[in-house]
Image 1 (cartoon, one colour):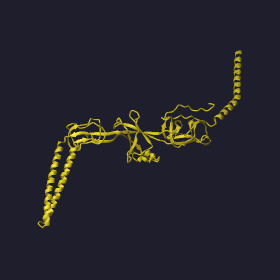
Image 2 (spheres, rainbow, N blue to C red; image 1 turned 60 degrees about the horizontal axis):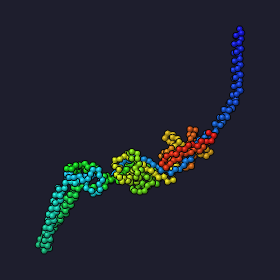
Image 3 (cartoon, helix red, strand yellow; image 1 turned 180 degrees about the vertical axis):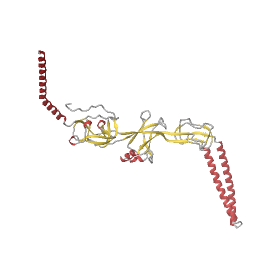
Image 4 (cartoon, rainbow, N blue to C red; image 1 turned 30 degrees about the vertical axis):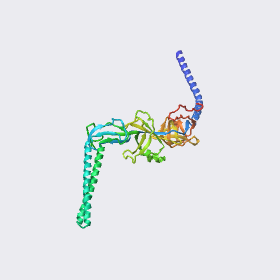
Length: 408
């Protein structure tokens, strides 16, 4: 009985302790609610974001295009006469000059043809002398009424035909002399000769194909294809001289070789083709690069980097300030009263950790760099300065850190 009473008493005491605890908690809850409400009031203020101004930087804008190299002048050597090849004079792959002898073709048949043509000319001239004398006599006899008018006319016509035969024979002599000259095949241009196709003793002629190809590689030509929109944009910026061969243009041309190295010589604009390719929507642009050592050869694949000069510089913003939404680029712009405006912009080339802005922003406007996760259109924010990364002339970034707000 005593044990039962002690147990019951302990239970009652426990319940009293729990009740007192609940009462104390109830007394303290209003104070906690007040504290939480005060903290909520602090958090309800404008969110803090880091911002920077849109600045102008003197950085050239460039773009790379796939290019193929070819000689600035190319010549395919084909024999103009048919004959057997006597000798190859030049060395395969060597540099040849204009009018330098490349091949010698057996010229004996053409020497004989020239001699025959000269003999025919002599016969024609002798015949013409005879007809001339006969015409003179017939004209004299007709003047004395000794012969008829028809006989006089026949003599005149025979002499005219003889004169024509002389002219034809003289032309044959000239043609035979030209054919004889063609037995010596010469280079029409300065350049590098390829590997000769025929061998000594082979029959060559107009129908046997190319004997060798020669390319002028100093300067060497690099051909690229640009789109219609790029061409029109360039014209719209006042570069109308693009249509004039050899004109000064606001571009620099660099050649990037297959191993990634930059060719030491700058190029120049040569010519723009007369029409666009309707299949690709591009137009061919040819550039010329000095190649004094003949190091570059036709057939190389490379890249032509077009560097556009930008008088007054270009607008730049940090890359982290840009929001990409379904292929569109947006930036939050801080306006009057620190109110945000989410604006769509157009971007150009990336330079280091920055973007070039081509449309949508003006110099001096303020954009949000950090805090984009809370940025909403027409939201009021608490802007703090952000130190942009400095861009060097080669596009590299100098290490900088964001400016943290005081009290953080």
